[in-house]
Image 1 (tube, rainbow, N blue to C red):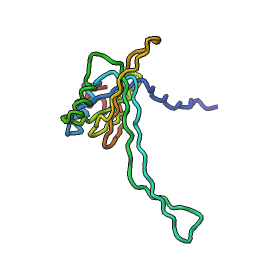
Image 2: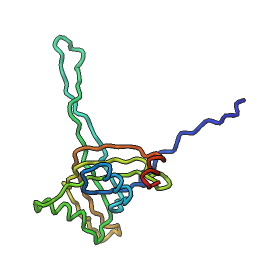
Image 3: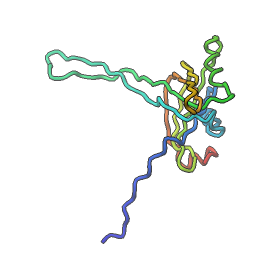
Image 4: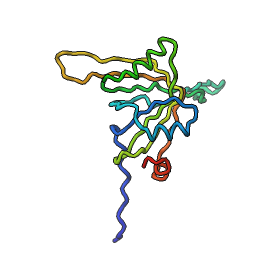
Length: 174
């Protein structure tokens, strides 16, 4: 009989434990350090659209009717959609409205998934974010729901990295 106990795989991260930061920056490293140290722009209750897909071109080879060859072409990024309770802060409305007035400025951003101790675990960064849609709350006098606003952000690419204990400690966030 063996005295070794089987090691259990780590629990997956919880989907409710995340932060979002939007900043203007040209240097990714200083951007990441500043953003991770200052953390959240706002308390978003929902974030979706962390996705990418690869377009495929099909080639029908002559004389080979049994298969179609497929080759990767371009990567497409989904729009990020973020939802939060409506407050007196109108920063998301203003960011979108500034573009409608022709004076908007793109933003880079981070979506940070945290572990159980609220330390950053996985980070997705997006570049050159453009607010393409702002949606205000839906009102219904029969229900007692929180009024939400939503912003949809088109961007020019996602990168991701995992933050281990050493990286978190080096950045002063662990």
